Length: 434
Ligand SMILES: NC(=O)c1ccc[n+]([C@@H]2O[C@H](COP(=O)([O-])OP(=O)(O)OC[C@H]3O[C@@H](n4cnc5c(N)ncnc54)[C@H](O)[C@@H]3O)[C@@H](O)[C@H]2O)c1
Image (cartoon, rainbow, N blue to C red; front, side):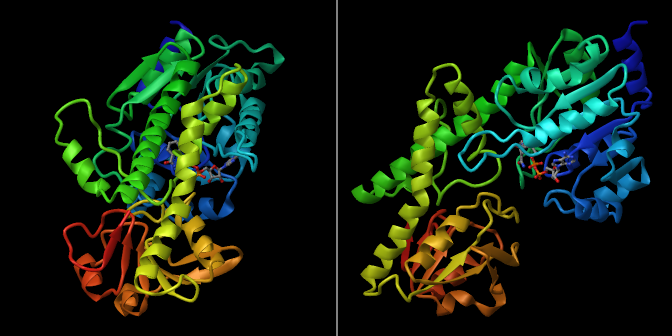
């Protein structure tokens, strides 16, 4: 029996130990899915707080109920901060660590490199390493492979290496880890075959591609497609405002076209971990090929302008009421980056609130999912919905359309509303829409 067939047999019998490095939004659901399938799974995270919470059977990821963690602990899942505990003896390691940008908006691969070095220290014969973190085409082969090949180990023979991106969409109830197809690109055909076989135990459809680069680029195409289309509609929203055309009505009408049109919606700026960051991994790498990825740069420019546009809109709306921004009481409704989740990463609210404060507005916020917020070293606390804080505001600024907000009541009881999400559609009131 060849190596891959023997490894597949062990996967089949669940005699195959899985380690996941990085137990965040991506790593935790992956680890739990393998545990649920009956694999022994060890999750490694350097954040002791997260590890403690998990080992107490609790979850810190919105989409994962604590019950799922509790259930996994009763099976063969453990979380640890100790490298040796998770990595020594692992048959497969999934690397799900952050890939942020540096201050100069360049890829920061320090987490991937640190994780790669840890894996290399414990790498054993026949081990599979899968990079999941989003990154530019070439990372798996240019950065991870050399770390793992040290000491003369050969990929596809002594160990296996692949890239398989994550497509998790926080808050999406229809598509989760199981029914979202997973793309896999191995360094060698054996690497792809083994990774695809393992992933098909937890995912309904695996899509093998010819190389890690294709898989890396696939993920970036998906995110670049979104970023470019969102920026297009954001630019059209800015124009529509000037032309006194309701962009929301336009999108709704265009969406009736049965083919060739996918609706994207404007907003106060881009948030989350993927869309505002990942395309810049691609434009950075493009420069090494004397290639200027203009779409991405332009999209970034337009999307970065949205918070400023929103602040100007608030000023204009207040002006119509005879009030200056300075001294006006602004209530921001919703501060997380997306509806019905608590994630604050890259949230436009984190830009808009300081801009409003800079112009000396009195800013408070209400977000039932975000009890407190750090802005420029100051902690702000959410006002409670039951206090009906909109009643005391000169302007209500809707940034995130959580379902918990009582829109008809807010529309009725507010003096002025600036709605950046069309959350007040169909309602009467003094409402300014983006
Ligand atoms: N969040 C999403 O919606 C999403 C979707 C698709 C892809 N991704 C990509 O997946 C990757 C992970 O994102 P995330 O949202 O899960 O990040 P996250 O910040 O939620 O989690 C990453 C975890 O890795 C841990 N970590 C970092 N370095 C470590 C190390 N050397 N050893 C052990 N633990 C370490 C951190 O403590 C953290 O808990 C990123 O590349 C991201 O771009 C994220």
